[in-house]
Each structure stands twice: as C-alpha cells, then as structure tokens.
Amino acid sequence: VQIAAAKFVVAISDYCAERIRAASEVADREKISVVRCAVGDAFIAASTPVDPGTHAITCIGRLTSRKGQLRLLEAAARLKREGVVFTLVLIGDGELRNQIEARIEALDLRDRVEMRGWADEASVTSSMLASRGVIVPSSDEGLPVVIMEALALARPVVASRIAAIPELVREGETGWLVSAEGVDDLADALRALLSASAQHLDELGSCGRALVLQRHDVRIEVDRLEELFRRIPST
Image (cartoon, rainbow, N blue to C red; front, side, top):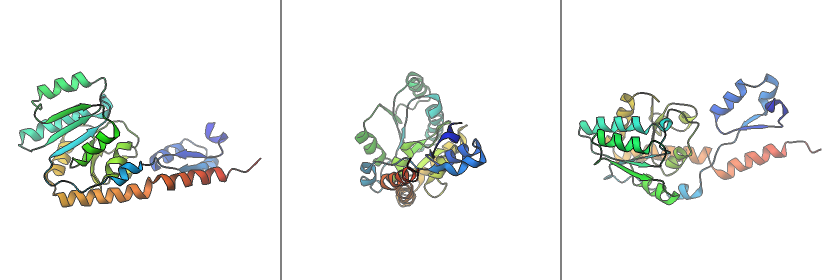
C-alpha cells in the first residue's frame, strides 16, 4: 500500500531494492531507485598506506549477539594456538560486554584482545588506520557504515556474506567474505589478512576505496535524490 501510494521509493542498496521490488506490484517497481548512504569527507581524506609492521585488526560495533564478537573470539583463540601474532581491537559497548570479557579470560586472550569501549570518530579512524584491516563478523546486517568507512580509509575488510555486504566486500578484490555462522572460514580469512604483505593489503584497500568513492560520494547521492524530487509533477 505504501509503495503504491508513493511518488518514488528509495533503497539504500541493490539488495534492498531487490527486496522491495519482490514485495511490490509489477506496476510500482519502476518507482524504486537506489540512493546510497554516503561516507564523510573526513574518512575519505584520512587514508594512508598500511603500516607493514602492524599486527592489529579492528572490530567496531555494539557488543550484541548479532554482531558476532563471540564467534570472532573463537577464531582469534584458534589463531593464537597456531602461534599467529596479532592484536584484536574491539571498539563498542553493549549488553554482551561481561560475557565477552569472560570469554576472553576463558580463551586466554587477555594478551591479544583490547576492549576500548565506545569511541568517538577520531578514535575510530585512528584505530582503523593503525590496523591491517577491519572485521565485521555479524550474523544480521544490511550494509554497515563501518565497512564504507574502512574502505574509504583504504583498509580491507573481512565480513559476513549476508544482505548487501557483498556489494562492497568483494572476495579477492576489497577483502574476504565469510560465512555468518561457524568459525572455520572466519579463522581462515583472519589468517590470510594477518599473513598478507602490506603491498597486497594496500592493493585491496585501494580497490575498496575506489569503489566507495564511486558508489558512496555524498555529492553524487544528493544529486540523485534531488533528481527524484524534481521528477515529481507540480500540482
């Protein structure tokens, strides 16, 4: 009913647009356009090459079951047992904080995991720039802004193969895609991220940055939205 009554409908990703089209009458599907979320200029301006000496990886998000931090800890514990060197930085807070802290203790990850709680934009940017890549192990997402921000900073991303995430995280091009369940392929992707050369990470990051500049530029997306409003007949 809402789609039928609308002059136009905006989706923020190709995935969302397809979901809306599937729920629409055929006659209303031409109303659906994609106008993507945009990345702030501060992230676009701040990109730097990966530090070849860093072993840090960053995960940013509210500490909830759908964000996947507990599964990430299991993968991290596996890497530690293999002797892989890394520091996992968790940024965010939430209802699972106590459970996550307890799991860090149980898995003997105190020397490998930093929990930083909530952080402002400058701190988030600094942490991502100090990392080899950004991890998004969620089981339920649309297209997280943090992925756009990480790629704008030229950092490759390891993320779950769900919803609209594969529109930006492209296997072998901008990062690694993993299952939203289980630990095996998440651990494999983290191992690949941590063992990759700085040159390879920069190549992935540069590709991701170019994709974000192409698809998530605020000026381009505002122009698209304005054009949709201009098409509405005056009354």
